[in-house]
Length: 466
Image (cartoon, rainbow, N blue to C red; front, side):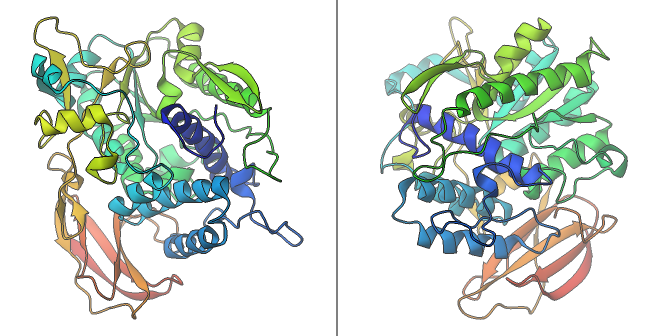
């Protein structure tokens, strides 16, 4: 395992798992835990960056982003903290609708042109037929009790794909939706029927919140399964993650997640059909060797432990390998080749070999399936995949509120029946003085549209029906 410096594909996995543990746990925790919670108090060392605390309300998005920008400027010369802050910034940009900036921030961790995966001869994709990914996953679900699908935490596209599976899976008997980001501390989530800013770290992102909201509306039992005992306090005098105890802590986290899925679902309902939405390599079906502090150790991921604990072999679906990065030259070589050959032009696909019937996969031992997502197309600065299979339509914000030069406003849409002080927006988009009024993508319903400035002050609001 490398440090958090993000230098290769194996490092990407390590960095993202660590970030999920450190930042996600810190956001979910009532008390700060780990590196991500090193919000400096009186007497804190100058070489530790200030990071956003858990928001108390939904007007802090722009302030949190501004803080990360300030700290990134301060830590530009510290490689590890710089990359840590860039990855946090990638997630924060995704929260405010800046999806292109989200992937740009994340990719800034990597050398220009570095691609994930090995080159595959271009002609090889001629041997595969492109199958609609949603339809194919739903067909395969008939043969499995548990589906595990992953995401990159800065790419809401992956959450939008999972959302499109929910209704049909429910009709097939799936009754449990488990999400890594949820905290068990929000015990009222199921009865309340929608997430709040304190329901889980990444649930501040509107598509993720709507994924959970939709599962609740359909009748799923929504289950938190994160191992919330936190990561150990790292040694941060030189590097954010230079603590050899991290390997043991990561294994404890993986095992804790698997145990929670068993204890909170299968122990009570052994025949339960479950959809699990996780981050990155937690759904890997093969253990890996990490190196930290000069010592090597095996990491047994959640899916590995889950299979051993329950005897259930989950269908694992990767979305992170065959997905776009910030520019074509930064794409993985296999992904770039597939897109250039037109295998995924306008919808997500799975690739099935025309002769053997096997599904295309960069590593059969790690995942069962790999979704190939097309490159995003943008309208008025928003990706059209926000339509989510026809579930949403674009709505142009109507306001005279324009930010001053050098600052920005945030247009937010909330369900009218949700508590405005606590709820996560259905959609939101930042805009500057030089940009046109933004488009919000909304489902049917009654909404309150609110415009706020960088300090969280309301500059205008109105009701709208879609």
